[in-house]
Every structure is written in structure tokens, then in C-alpha cells.
Length: 465
Image (cartoon, rainbow, N blue to C red; front, side, top):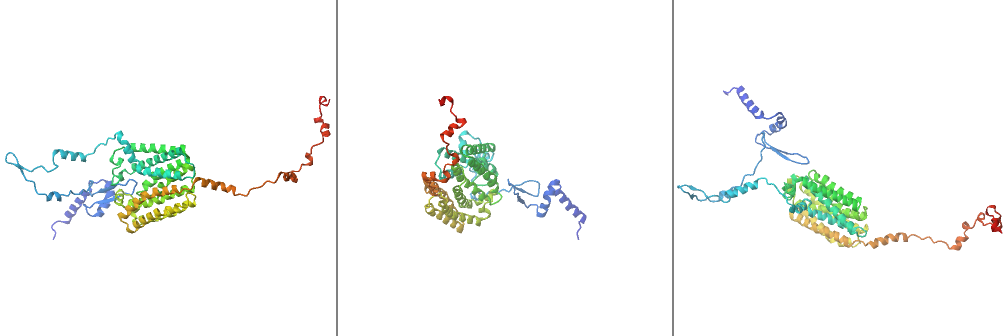
């Protein structure tokens, strides 16, 4: 039936298999052979992504070469156009007219656009680059909350300490944001929101960015430690560490990064309080609680409309991996702001009018958070985010307006010792008539003759005469 012997067929198949795998080294056969044999098809791609700090996605084919799939150019619009008429040429020949934009100058410009370019940084561009590197808007929010914490402290206002605390906190924020951008360059390049940052575009070198961050960090922490107090300097160094070494790597590992980032945002008002009082009081923790709870509706609403960007960058945010939890947490902490506002007068931070005047804005934020929880669309997330932008300044301004005056605190401190029972001393005759104070017989003054007869007190012959 089959004229070809089985030995020849087996030899041909074996030769093809040997030719296919013979070009690979031993290490390539051991690492790729099993995966490619299990796929069964030489034209099928194998893709995986490693879970490491700097993630990379490698794509390989069954051969030794690396390939890249490119999206084909859409030519429907070009094909629908009518053909251009032929132009006469000398000698009876005809040629087609050049297509629009196909001249030598345009092709040269397109070629230059596709090439790598060297970015030159002039001194005039440094302020803009530094502001983008330090996220100047976020740093301004950090300084504002620090100033609010200092203003809410029950101590006299000291302008020099206030300026030093604000400057040191701002420099610490610039350092943390710069280090964060240095670590996230390969991931920021995949996101539309962050692809124009200075390190991604190459406007500044990594060494320059790290030097700027180190200068800001050392200067800020030194100001807070030496010129304010050591507690505030410790909190500033702790904030830099939490933001760069905990929050930044956790963004690609777990959704717990949101809670760690909320702690980072809650520390600036605490630093303002400690700069004024040099102590961690319940009022400082309450101000930190305001910032901690406010960040969840603010950031969850922001990240909801940036889910595609965060997914491309490889960030594990609640809006990407746990969308239902993202909406629940935003609603939960919006309601928590109502309870925290009620604790302020109980801790002596504000008067009892603060929970009443802050109730409308807290309820409005909770209402928008409930609509975001119920509808879960872009419109409700956008309204909640923009409401959070004016809610925090308004809440801090109302707390400062309803702050308990300092004289009330001093009067309460003085009222405590005055309310204690006073001990009335007995009159002087009673003291003299007391048996305990009666003169002892042994201490009675001897008569004058006895004094004169004493050999030690005898008068000299000159005095006797």
C-alpha cells in the first residue's frame, strides 16, 4: 500500500525535528523546550509577566529571534480616494504627481521625528523641571495642611517657627516626590497621565534628580530637627521613608498601598501640631484622622477614571482589582468625617458649633459618595473628586474659625487649683497657746547671776571694774 519504507519516513521526521531544535543551546532547550512542545504550534506566541519590583513583559516565538507585533496601518481612507491623474513629461512619458506630504523635506522631517534626540537643559528651564519633579501642587497641599495643624495648636503663634516648619515640610515633600518619580520611570512611560514627566522624557538625568531629592530631603529634615524640634524632624524623615520605601513598591504588589498612602497624607497636620507644641496630643491625632479619612473618597474617585492607565502601568489599585471595595471604602470614610467632626469639641479642639456648621459639607460629600457607590460611573466619580477638592480647605477653615480660644484653655487650667479646698491658718494667739509650741523648761533662760557665775561667760577684770 505504502511504497515509501517506514525507515525513510522515520528518518525524514527525525531530521526535521533535529534541524528544528539543533540550533539551540543546552540552556535554551532546557528552559524553552518543554513550553514550546506543549504549545504544539510553532506560530503561537508565549507571553508571561514576572512579578518583581521592576516588571518587564517578554514575548518570544518558537525560534531564537525576538519579534514584535505591529498594528497594520489603516489604508481605508487612502484606498477610497480617486487615483491622481498622470502628468505629461518630456519625451512622451507620463508620471504620477507626488502625493501630499511626500516631498524630500517632509520625509526628512518625519525621519528626524522618529530618531532619538538629545534633550538639552538650559538654566531657564530648571524651575519648571524642579516643579514637575517635586509635584508642586501636591507639595502645596502638604504645606497647607501643615500650616493648618500649626494654627490649630493651643499655643501662641510664633512666625519664625511657623515658617521653618512649613519650609521643612515642603522640602521633605519635594524629596519624597522626586524619589518616587525616579523609581517609577518605566511604569510612568506606559501611562498617559505621567508620560510627560521630566525623567520619562529625558529632560533631566537620573543623577540630577537623585541629587535634587537628596538635597531637599537632608535640608528639610535638618531644619525640622535642629530649628523646630526633634519630634517634628523624626516625623518628616518617617514620612519620606513611608512614601518612597513602602507606598511606592506596594503600588504594584497589593491594594494595601492606598491605606499606607493615607497614613503618609495624614502626617503633615500632625507635624504642624508637633512643631508648635513639641508633643503628640489627641488634637494632633484628630487632625491626622481628618486627612486620613478624606483621602479615600478623594483618591478612589480619581483612580476610578484612571483605571486603564493604572492597568497599563501595572499598578494594583482598588479601582482596578476590587472595584466594589473601592466604592464601599469611599462611602465609609465619607461618613467617618461626620463622626470625627463631632469628636473635635469633646477633645477641646473646637467649640460645639463646629459639628453643626461642618455638617452640611460632610453630608454633601457623603451624598456624592453614595451616588458613586450606587451608580459606579465616570460622572459620579468626577463629581465626588471635584467636591473633595474644596471640601478639605472648607473643613479646615471651619475648624480654625471655631477653634476654642486660648484664654478659655488657660482659665480652665487655672480653675482646677482654685477649686481645691483652702487650708486656713489659725490665728497667732492660738499658735502661741498651743501646747506643742510652749517653751520647754530646758530651754528657759537662766537668771543673770547664773550667767555671770558661769566660768566661760565671766567678765574680764577690766569689764568688772
